Structure formats: C-alpha cells, structure tokens
Amino acid sequence: MRMVDLIARKRDGKELTTEEINFFIQGYTKGDIPDYQVSALAMAIFFQDMNDRERADLTMAMVHSGETIDLSGIEGVKVDKHSTGGVGDTTTLVLAPLVAALDIPVAKMSGRGLGHTGGTIDKLESIQGFDVEITKEQFLHLVNEHKIAVIGQTGNLTPADKKLYALRDVTGTVNSIPLIASSIMSKKIAAGSDAIVLDVKTGAGAFMKTTEDAKELAHAMVSIGNNVGRKTMAVISDMSQPLGEAIGNALEVQEAIDTLRGKGPKDLEELCLALGRQMVFLAGKASSLEEAEEKLKEVIANGKALEKFKEFIANQGGDPSVVDHPEKLPQAKFKIELPARKSGKVAELVADEIGTAAMLLGAGRATKESQIDLAVGLMLNKKIGDAVEPGESLVTIYANRENVDDVIQKLYESIVIADDAVAPVLVHDIVTE
Image (cartoon, rainbow, N blue to C red; front, side, top):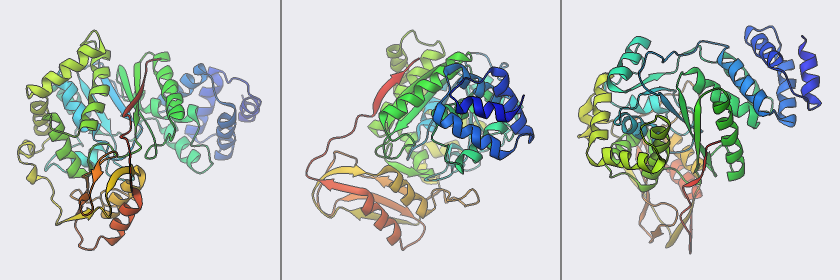
C-alpha cells in the first residue's frame, strides 16, 4: 500500500477503505509517512469529503493510535458532554454535579484553555486546593463512590489527532467537517464514555458561524458516535453573544454556584437543562426528555445539586466552603464600570471580541505558556434585547491593574446599542441521528 495511491483515490472522489485509513493513520503516527503527503490527503478530503463509514473509520483509527481510558469498572451508563467552545461557557461546572446528583456517573476529562478564558481545569483551580492531577485509580474510585470526578487530560490520548490537528492548522484544512468531527469524536471515544452529548455552537463567537454549518457538524458527529456504538445526541446552541454573564475563571465558578442554587442567568440555566436532559435520558434514568428535565429541576430545587458540587470539591482536595462563601475565591483589586454612552437596546455583543477583552485582562491564554490570572474577567450587566439608559453600566470589569483603557476600547467596539433589538433564540435544534 502506498500513500500516493490513497491521495490520488481521494483526489478523484473515491472512497478509502478501512485498511487504507488505518494504514495512513498508523504510518503518520509512527513518523513513517511525511507531513507533505498527509497535507495532500487532508486537502483532498477537504474538497472531496468522506462518507459516514469513512468518517467512523478515521475516528476509530485515531482512537487506536494511543491509549484509551477504560471506564468499565464504573457501574452505570457513563455519559460525557462536549462543547465546541465559545465565550463564558460555564456549562461543565454546572452539568457535572447536576447530573451526578441523579446518580449518573460523570467521569470528565477536561483540558486547560487557550483563548478567551481558562478551560474547565483552570476554572476549578480557582478553588483553593482543588487537585486535577489525581491518579487514574483515584479518578475511577471517586466516580464509583460519588458519581463525579474531573481529571486533566492524559498525554497519550489520540496522538494521531494531535499531529493531524497541528498540520491542518498550517495547511488551510481546519474547516473540514469530516476532519473536525473525527478529531472531536476520537477524543471523546478514547475517554471511555458509553454515551456522548454534544453542544455545537453557532454564531459570531463560535467556530461554526452559521446554523447550517453547525447542523452539518452535529449530524456528522452524532452519526460517527452512533456508528461506533456510542449513544450520541447534540444540541445546536447560540453563541452570537457570550453565554451567561460571567467571563473569567473565579467569576464563572461563582456563576456556576448561583446556577446550581437556581439563581443563575436564565440562558445558562436553559442550556444546562437542554444538555442535562439528554445526558439523563441517554443514561437510562428517564423515559423521556421531559421527565429528565423535571428530575434535573427537582435536584436544583431541593439543594441536592449544590450539595453534590460541595462533595465534588471536597473529594478533590478543594475548600467546599467557597460554595457558601464565594468571597474566598480569588478577588480582583479593581472593579471598573463601563457606562452606556446612549439610550436604546443592546443589539449586538460580539462574543469573540468580548472574549478577547477578557484575555487582555489576563483571564485567558494568548499562548500555551501564558499565565492566567484567575481573579480577573468581565460581568455582563446587559444582554442582547435589554434596554439601557446613558450612564448605566453595560459591563463590570474585574482587573488587577488600574489602567484598563485597552479593554474599555475593545468593549465599546464590541457592543452595539440600537433603537430596537430582540434577544436571540438560544437552542436552535436537537440532533439525534
């Protein structure tokens, strides 16, 4: 088998066999196939696409390129959630304890953030003492005993995906549905869960700018999951404005606590219930999505979800008293209000630009080596559709430096006030096949 033949076949719009896909992934992982040939094949896939079987084969070839996590020792249906990113996406911090409170095992492997704010791991580390570097044995024990644990990503999951992703980044082939879908799904499948719920974002702050593209990606990932024996569902959710009100690490932890109390931002709660009900349904703990949602609302109302969050923090070495005393979270030295310059309604909050403003404060990483300031960030006091008067605060800036003129300028450029505006629909679609 020769790589040049695979490139020519895909260039001409033909299918690659399972054996050919395995040959390419194994050879590239070992270093036997050079970057320039894989670049050529990636570009051929970009233009000629792949069918469902090829996409599933590519995903599983990447899964088998490294180690996989065996969660078979954990009782029950293990359900994982993945979001395609966004700004102010606090859903994992809410969903993990919320779903675990219904006795559903949540074995979550999360990464650090690159961009607007930290990843789930960084956010949890804003809780004093919280340890994500627990052993695999401790991880499995905690999920078995308490239904919830979060661990940092292991180094050798899907090495083929890491190599291919880096190559796509510099060859103009990032935006290819089969390559994106197999990249995301290979990591989720290697992480060992039985069922997967996907939050596919669409809008200005998302990777997929249009609802049509987001639906296409969601269908591709759901199809891969179901084809390889993982029950998979997806929600298409809006990211034309940041989710919730908090953008920043400690600020998002506090927002998650408020949401678990039933007092969080309405859009964050709505999305957590939309994703959570799919997790509960796929875990077999409810016979319908409606019943699943009622159960989730019940554990918020009776306090069990919040108690589970405290237990989760304590089990991983963190200080659970932050739940009742959020002032123990890292605090910024300065709080600066951003006043509205005219009256009207908020018509636009450009999510990715507002995310960049948070990063300028130090809430996110510009490069992998950047240090995150866990205390800083932004609180949105107005969302799209809200009325404003001159002088009213649009955003509260939490900073550890007195001069934030660069952040103020970026925010004013990213917020549009018009005579009229309507709040966007949050959940655009549910994809089950």
